[in-house]
Amino acid sequence: MGVRLKLKKMLETRGIMQKELSQMTGIQESTLSFLARNRRDKINTELLSKIMKALNITSFDEILELED
Image (cartoon, rainbow, N blue to C red):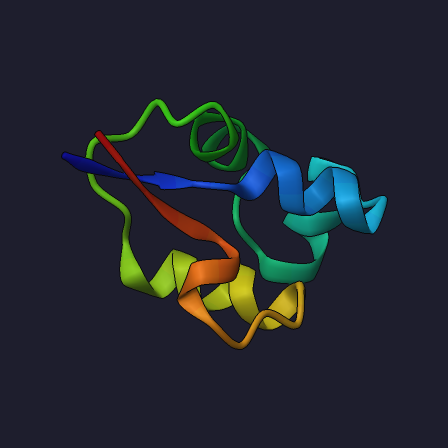
């Protein structure tokens, strides 16, 4: 069982491009790309916090989901 970041879905829902999110958070576009494609085994809590604040997400279940 793992955890999947729903970043791509959140960006599509809000009509925000990765480049815009990069500017909003100070996170490199390449890092956001890896996160959006779930290419990371671990999620840095500082990055997650910046993303959640920028997208006005207040609950982890909005951006994270458990995988089988």
